[in-house]
Length: 456
Image 1 (cartoon, rainbow, N blue to C red):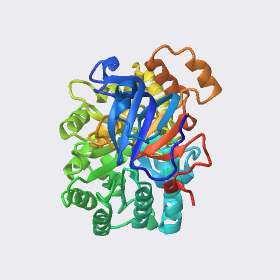
Image 2: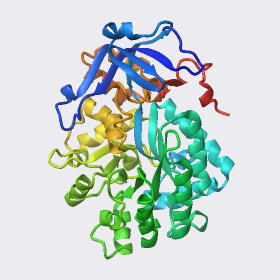
Image 3: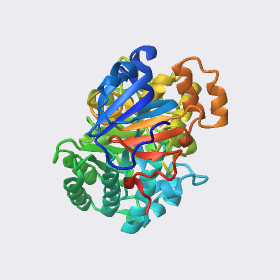
Image 4: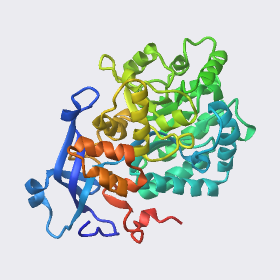
């Protein structure tokens, strides 16, 4: 890298390097046409947004006098990754052995989340979690907190300090959970409304109404969650759907008057634009049609689904051109095994192969960037490199390890290079991460830590 960037705040920044982004959805269009590749690009950033993007030689005259150009040779500039389903409180219990979903919740998850009654613990984990996200090149995520309001405050406090665009919310659980993790229907509503008024649209922070899943909320609580969505503009909703067969049977017993698992949420007014349903491993064609019509999104969490033995998400059925459903990529954590979206793409490719389909590299990176942004209805702000977009970026190194470097030598196309990144890459492949144009992670310069990211 030439001309190392300043560690202090700046209003204008110029980046140069090979770049990839999207002009269309590669699931609905020819992937070769949907993918945009600039072999030598300039990204000019002013006041946190991209003001120029295109061939360096054509745009170099637009660089203001006195602004140095930060060059990343042998790397790829990309929009930052988007994680559409992740639990920050579960970071301390990632890679917990031996259980499937329901037993895993009882044995590992609930005891871990109970500790977030302590605001100091919540702050420490939120800081570690966001640091790890940025190290993995993820700049936006839809995040589950715990039932404790202080867990939400801790998360948004840290996100606001970093200026990351995040979606998060307090988990709602008024039954089928330990005493120290249950709220009440009215109490959960009141706490959520107070958090919404404190955080939603404050800077880059956005709020998601967050019933954990149907089994841990009464019908009254789900109805009140639907009411919350009508109280303020632009709110999100996140929950889990049809992850595990035992879970689905349980939901059927708990809600005998509902036509399906998805109908439980739809009846409560929770299925619509900006609704993100995690996992959706065991859904049927009626569910896909409902999601398409409602404009909600599904979060594909391949590392988690494989780790817990939940099953294989039918990605290509979900994005069928006859009634495409919005789909993003989720790491889940702690059931997921990595916060790296490159790791998620590795497993997503294998899941597709096992179901007889081929996940094209352009389709994969779409899921991790523009597709994730579209799932969150944020594709007018993040997810692509284009003039006017918020300058949340990651710099990817296809030669991060000796094996990757050796393999990269034989790559003939940009698609080949992207495939190497998604199959062999991990957090080591993230050379740098920028949030609103500010450098917040630099892999190769441990001494350089942006003030906003100091880990204290």
